[in-house]
Image 1 (cartoon, rainbow, N blue to C red):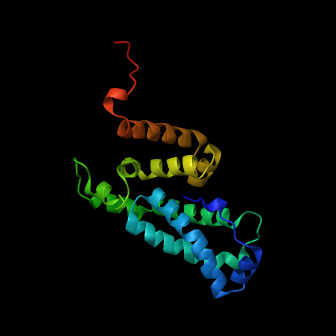
Image 2: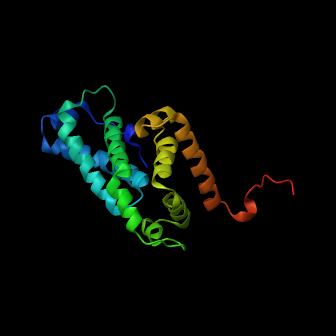
Image 3: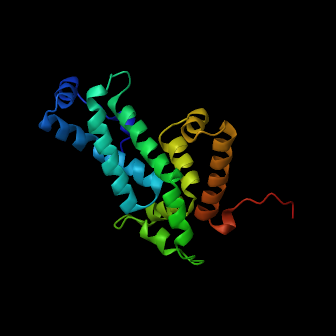
Length: 193
């Protein structure tokens, strides 16, 4: 999987895309779309909603492309747009209202099972299910810290919270992921008995 910040777009392609060149825009889309959709899917945790947010992200990206100052790599700039869109969704009162209306499933939630992308091997499914089991905010913090390389300070700034918020979310999420992924017989106990 390629990270957005690792994607390089040639200057001439970028110049043509900023001028509205369709072929250049298609080349940029082909380069950044898979990594952008993956990032959004991991932060949001729902395939259909991720596709909607991806479309919004790409629309915003192309609307703002002529304003791109090239102070940072194009992928880093797009990553910022995508994460902002995801956090706007996660903070949305409409999302919270929808969660209140959804039925409670005390078994393996159908919603979690639906998040698993068909066609992956068992280990990847376990990881995807484990990430899906996290609360949306915790999942976003884990992804931003572990995969995208954000610092706790940057995550706190994105969420409009303190650094300790980011650290505590990450610690709790790591504990929950360990519980999900480690077999019980391999878990270390803190007790002396």
